[in-house]
Amino acid sequence: MTKTALNFIGGKWQPARSGATFETRNPATLEMLAYAAQSDADDVADAVAAAKTAFREWRLVPAPRRGEVLYAVAHLLEERKEELSRLMTQEMGKVLSEARGDVQEAIDMAYYMGGEGRRMLGYTAPVEMPEKFGMALRDPAGVVGLITPWNFPVAVPSWKMLPALVAGNAVVWKPSEETPGVAASFVQVFHDAGLPPGVLNLVLGAGPAGEALVAHPDVRVISFTGSTETGLKVYARAATMGKKVALEMGGKNAIIVLDDANLELAVKAITWSAYGTTGQRCTATSRLIVQRGILRALTDALAEKASMLRVGYGLEEGVEVGPLVNQKALEKVEKYVAVGREEGATLAFGGTRAGDTGYFYAPTLFTNVSRNMRIAREEIFGPVLSLVPVDSLEEAVEVNNSVAYGLSSSIFTENINQAFRAIRDLTTGIVYVNHGTTGAEIQFPFGGTRGTGNGMREAGQTALDSFTEWKAVYVDYSGRLQRAQIDNRE
Ligand code: UN1
Image 1 (cartoon, protein in one colour):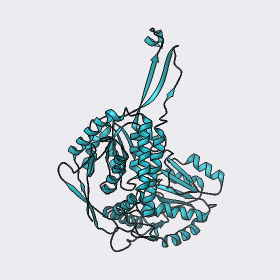
Image 2 (image 1 turned 180 degrees about the horizontal axis):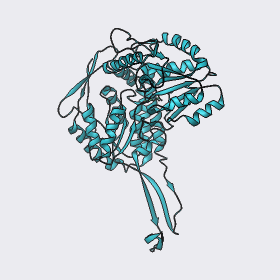
Image 3 (image 1 turned 120 degrees about the horizontal axis):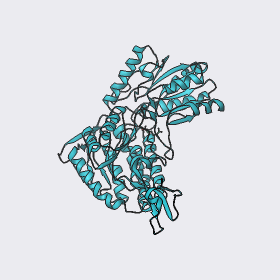
Image 4 (image 1 turned 135 degrees about the vertical axis):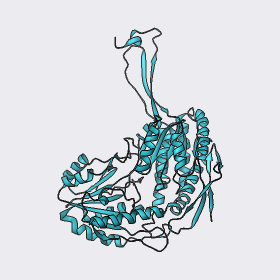
């Protein structure tokens, strides 16, 4: 049944002002799912105006009360987890068990950020004069704009809107055009949880809606997750207006496997991190850096394990790998597999489409990859893994750190000395030991170095940094003009 996905502005569901719509399709079955509002700058202006009005009161709601709304969001998400997860699988293809994990991340974040309503810690420090007091407080930034991708259509937006809301901001959210239905259902949860009208606004649509949000003078912060190409454009545009921007972009994450690794453990983790979510996570493993002594055994075990993976429609029981999100993503994967062949890497398995309908692609491994090949450096965002052989831990770390991205990396070794050297020397924002590159938990900073980001982090306490301004407050209770107040450097 075809549905309609609308914008949510000032507490009301409404079509785009122009009446324009776009269609969404199930990437596994290609069936038509919904007509969604195709918004432009006018809709964004309406949403920002609604947010600006709502901000005046929301900022004055005591933070513990704001936190309670987030707890109500957590409860409703628990109740609606199955419904949201199924919708997610239909819209963007990830298998149902992973879709449940996606919603669970938002539940975890709602509880965590709900707790921030009673923390939101600032600090005091001694000041130079008697009878004077100093403190630093977090103030909400105002109206914040969120632009999010389709691969984690509930989790990633939750990482942004929950800290933004508990800190007292009003939000305008532009989700990916692949997942308007799940976005609308997610926003409905906030409304039902009692969030006042206008505090969270949804503007559906494609690039132009996002551009209008970035360029709107009343939006002080932009938090973006998506491709490096788009992220850098957002950054450049927002910089001309002096906005604060948090960027979460590409990855080219590696698992390092040393000769002394627990082979079975490594193979399981590689399979999950490389082919889970069909390789469409920014934290997905797309490189294997393997010490030569374990190379043969690892490749054989991996081939066996990958051949058993069931590719198919994510709503079907037992399916482990869903489709790519759309035709363009499939073509990108095909292009990179051709590039890998031309570059002279060995195709160990995969390398073909799978299934008759839908954007399915077989789990793929290239071996004999050298570190300079494009398939070892560029983000593919699909189920394609490139194996680079190395001689030592030092070489492995160097290869790991040599790419343009720096999100997540992992090392498999049973030797604690090697593990700690790797922790010290790997230059990514996330490091795992004896665990794949995916599976970050919401209470720790999430983000990456180099081309992955711009130094900001999501999740954990650090999430508040994107959405708050520090305010330093000095209170003089002496009742007289203290000399240092005029010039404390005298
Ligand atoms: C992403 O791909 O954008 O660590 C987020 C993980 C997940 C989140 C990934 N918790 O893989």
